[in-house]
Image (cartoon, rainbow, N blue to C red; front, top):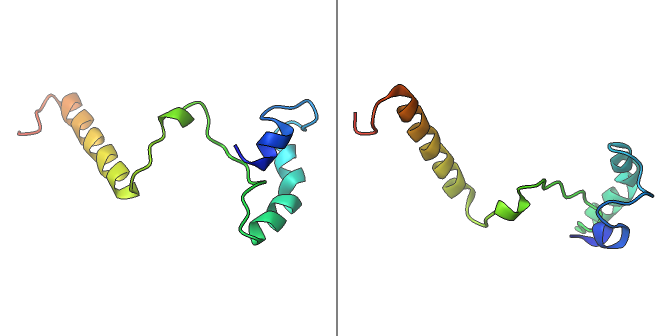
Length: 82
């Protein structure tokens, strides 16, 4: 959670419906980001945020590729050694 979420809450009756809130916060977000401050940046994480892990992108991509290859092999009826 950043400053925006802490001060306004993740859901508030004061906030306009999506995507209007994003547009309304644009000047504040831009000014903060120019200073290297992410306090007003939208944090879109969705329901799977708790599944996130910190690791190098290459490791994540390699795991995705391995999983995709394993799935393709299983769908083709072949084993990885075929």
